[in-house]
Image 1 (cartoon, rainbow, N blue to C red):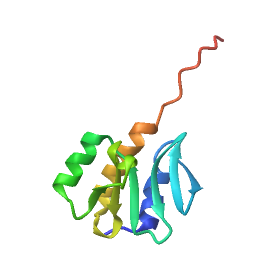
Image 2 (image 1 turned 135 degrees about the horizontal axis):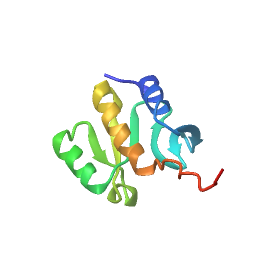
Image 3 (image 1 turned 45 degrees about the horizontal axis):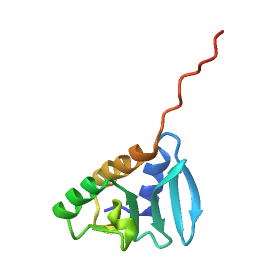
Image 4 (image 1 turned 90 degrees about the vertical axis):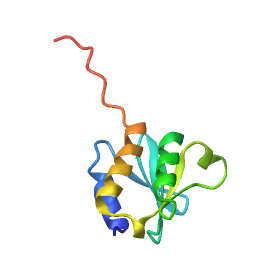
Length: 111
């Protein structure tokens, strides 16, 4: 089982990730937010694709559910952290991160 300290450690290990407050949550972003966690560390919201969300909800509905409202329709998925194993947290966190991470463009400067 994981907690918000595990989440923070894994998120901050992903290239380009920054941590910032976001309303009553903590956000992890690389330009755009890919994950937020509530203050108590009970729920994690992830920016998955709608297909990724559908797969996770179908496989483990006790852990994964669409975020309420329009956000959930775009793939934002709520995760119950206490029910998740560390390797699965790393996998879904990396999945969400990959939607926002953009590697730096090669330099066009000539030397």
